[in-house]
Length: 148
Length: 331
Image (tube, one colour):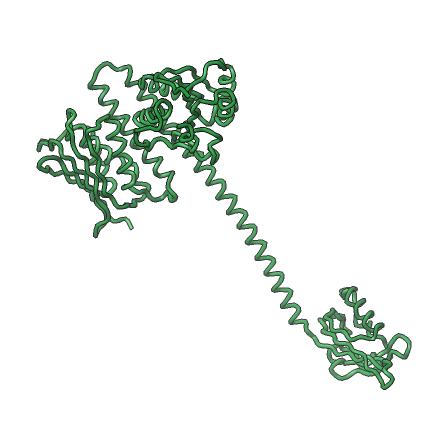
């Protein structure tokens, strides 16, 4: 299969506008493109199914009583190649099998922690396996290595 | 004991001994010719009476405890033993019945059972209360933990967003230093709540994580990090202060000691000592001048170490700087 090349297309699913903005800027600083921001499951449903993101950062607790797990299933159904990364202050709420998602960045994260995780993910997507050491700010699931 | 004659109507008593008269309060002449049932009363268990009746009609012996009544109306627990006495042709000639007052024994047994039930109920109730309290506390702890993390994330985001809008490099640098302090606090919090015991903080594990973060965020691939630390557990209450102290020392080593992109080695070592514990941070950078620094960083180190009862010693290596943090024994 042909692997994507940078800049990668990134979907941010986060109901806290400040954090969404912060993540968006870090993603752009790293040279990637934010495809869309979504605050709830409904916002993700409203996106164009033809536009597949390379990476999705998904918060667990979302607006309008929806959850990251619901978004995770929707993404898997719509865009099977998208790498799904939970970004949450409550990593214990993630099921053992990650519901098929590829990893988690626990909150609170530092700029450096987030940037390092992003670089590792970029290598995972574009030129696997990654040559950068696994950063402490990122916990991969077994599903990530399965895409290499 | 009594002897009854089943061949007469209603199986009357034909003999009773002295002990029986003493136990029941009845005289011999009040007893003879009567069926034993006059010993029963409203509190006597019907089921037990049925069992005795059944044993008599089958001609079998029986041992049973039942509540009987004395002549004066008082009660006693009677351990009754009743058995048929057969003659040569094997027909029943008499029934022999012995009585033993086991009231004390029964009462003691009942009391023991009642007490045990009461204690068991009390224990179950208390256990339920404690479990509910623990669950409430655990929920609360998770909720607070979640909120603290979300707030720290928000503070970090706010500072990062603000730092983009500042043109002045000096102010930007100060804001970045502030972000690093917030990040250090966030790392303290994460380390604490990921550990099994939230009352103790492994300052060594934290120091290694923080050093990786600080070296990493400098974007400097020419700084080698070497760590040799044994676990050092301190009370959780000192975690934030010592976390900030370590952050100042580590960022100073990189921003000052290894300034202007100098390549170098940052070494962390330490462990328990006779009076407590010690952490050493060495760099092979330019060292420091003797003139005391007036920056916020140095002030933070001084004030916060004093608060936790620790001491910090700076010494010039040739080349480089060595900082030793000595922690008093808290145990």
